[in-house]
Length: 377
Image (cartoon, rainbow, N blue to C red; front, top):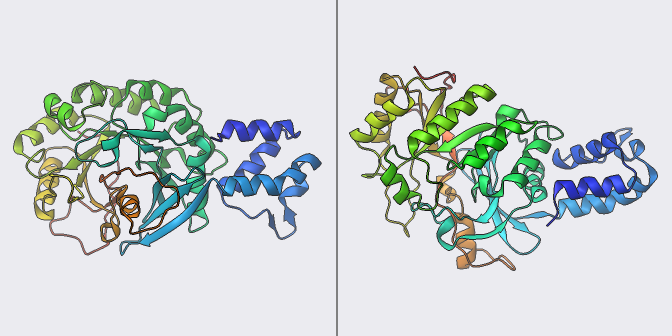
């Protein structure tokens, strides 16, 4: 599988210096035309690079292909993306110029409320394939934020993900705070994130404050307790200067009780972070249920009143099977023809869009109030 390092080495072998390589990569990841007016990329490159450029760009654009696009009423769009070996992943265009990308085909964590990991890890997605998802999306519309919350556990493909993040945060022209690394809490990720030239924002999948319940919900996640995950997150937040996004998929009758609210207050009060509470995107094949919006809103309000900065988020693209992997699962079931796709189920965990948790009534459809991120007191 082609990596960004492979591309860099090939350009170097053709005589490209660092500035030349950066120009080529910038045009690719930003989906820029090779010529714009009188300024042509080839005019700034050595002859061997110019001669190889058309073939190289064709190869880079061919890393991914758009199989299907399903726009949602909320401004999102679910993309079924084909890879060169016939595997498929999903990307999600989010409202306000965001994009959710996949870092693996399948997943080894095995979260009980997620379909992706039921058959385990199928293969890693290369750093070039990750960036190619962004380049593909940018040919459709602007992308100013990239979240690693699609298929896969980014910390299990750590070097490829960090290589992609470095390119996106430099030649990709995406602000470091707008690159969001999401993980179940792998200790390797905490160390690696702080050493890179691009330090992304960090999202930690918490889901419960109870160690035993977390082991049941995330059976193959690292054996860190919720308290240890929050402690590691707090260190990274202080080091990077970015608040941690603690992710909580709200499951009816599982992690929405008063005991969990007490646990959240005990864990997060005073921490440099924000709690993203996401009502579950129900899937018929799984036993978990989505709580109604009024209950979710009440939980978020009660937490906020007790000093926990809480954002209640609603699933993007629910009208187009918004949970990660649902479109791919439909394709595998035969509703969409995907040549060469392997038969594996995918995730039901939803990529999300923000609704305010601080309003007294349900906001109008599509409305959102921005809440400044600050330390939770």
